[in-house]
Structures are given as C-alpha cells and as structure tokens.
Image (cartoon, rainbow, N blue to C red):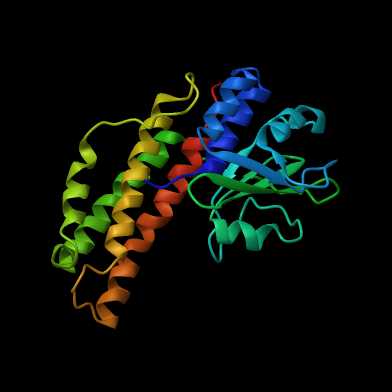
Length: 245
C-alpha cells in the first residue's frame, strides 16, 4: 500500500483550518504512532514536532493545503521555492499551501522528517486543475481497461501472475480509511481504487523472480503502463484534495 503522508497532512490540515476537525483529531490522523518533526518552519532554528507546525498554520494565514504528486517532467502545482522541486521529486509528494509547502521524508519506520519551505514573496502558483471526481473515476476506469488489454497482449501474467488477479478484483467496492468523516464518499472510493492500482503498477513494473524480460518487452510494458500511472496519480491528488462544499 502506498503511503501519502503529504496527502494526510493536506486533507487534515485543511479540515483543521476550516473548523471541520479538532486539533487533536487532525494531529493524530496525520501522525498515527510515528514521530514527525519539521525543519525550516518560520520562526524556528531547529526541527520541531509536527504539532507546532499545525498550530502555526492559522498564524501564517493558511486556509487550505493541496497534495501535489510531482514526477519528472511534470511539477505543476509546486511553487518555485529554492530547493523545493528537487526534494519533492525525490519524495514524490508535497503538501502545498498559500504561505508554506511541506515535503515528507520517511527516516525508517518510526520517524518522518518534514522540510518546510516558506512561500512568502514568491509568485503565486496556480494549483493543479481539480477535475470532477466522477470524471476522474471514469478516466481511471478507461485507463484500467486499456492497460489490462495491453498487458494481456504482452502476456504479463507470465511475468507476474499476481497482476491479473489484482485487476480482476477492482470491481469490488472498497473505501480508503483514515480521512475526515465528512470527506466525499466518491473521493474515498476513488482513493481506494487508486491505491490498489498503485499496487498493480508496482507488481507490473517489477520483473518476476526468474522471469526473462528482454529490453523490448520491458519497454513495451512501461509504455502500456504509462497512461495508468498518470491516471492513478491524478486520481490520488483529486481524492485527497476534495473539500466538502
């Protein structure tokens, strides 16, 4: 299961800032049993507990955070703060507000280090376009169908037999836990499917033990998976960034 601490921060910090969640509820949901510390927070000289950052958000004038999942060649939604893009690309995620951006880096199973980037004085960056959740879900369905057909033609089952089983199980209705109680049910469903598909991508991109996959086969596989990877990324962003009206 892919973990998106920046997504949890974005959705729960927004819920806290808009009065939809209590401080303790939001902090517990973000951190769980893991220690989180933040460096680079304005007004601090050393790393501080994540709770300090959460408390400081209102003083900074923040109103909402968004999850951004940058990849090489597509860093839309990332402000041009020095050092932000390289670290966010390495992490694969960032939580971006109006005055602050934060990037998580797991330091083993028990500690997450966050780096804060003040955005005051920087040119505003338009947030990524937020598609209708049902449209995003439909795009995910289309990508799954196209990818399944392409992978069947490549005989991926021979490389990793778990992949077809995971694809076949996507019709099962599931929801992603751990988000605010008033989060859009469609967003919860989209996120659960996207996380399952992220697992499909992991398995499909990994050569099965002892499998003989030559360069041309691997290239064809990667090309077939690219649209699904893009749809999964967009679905995860849309699901975490959904805000109740």
